[in-house]
Image 1 (tube, rainbow, N blue to C red):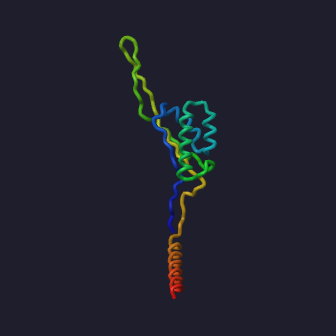
Image 2: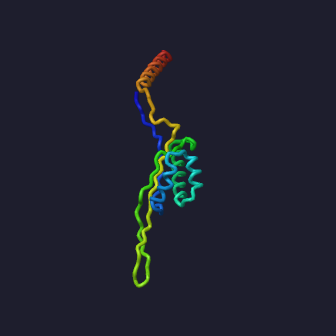
Image 3: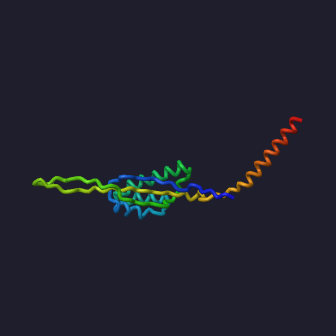
Length: 150
């Protein structure tokens, strides 16, 4: 018996999104572990600015799941959602008397991993039975060819 691991998870990345990771994590914590349809409703109704980029990444992950796995949107669940800090853009704001102040514009990377509940993670195949079936079918074909030629 051979146990084959099926691919049940797909992901989508949103990189260099211009907002702090702290503000995006506030929204991500609300959707972690929820179904795809419930997540879309939550993101549409929440009043935070971080909802729109997260909505786009979730939508992209669902599109990846339907293309790669061929899964239905009703079976999708967000298995992992994380926000990491990206590079900080540094700018200078010019002030009076030749001075300037540093302005830091933070960015973040959003990762959404979706899992399809309808696909089992492991698939069992009995390879020894298929070999015996193939061997038996080959013998039967040879036997029929001999009978036809006689």
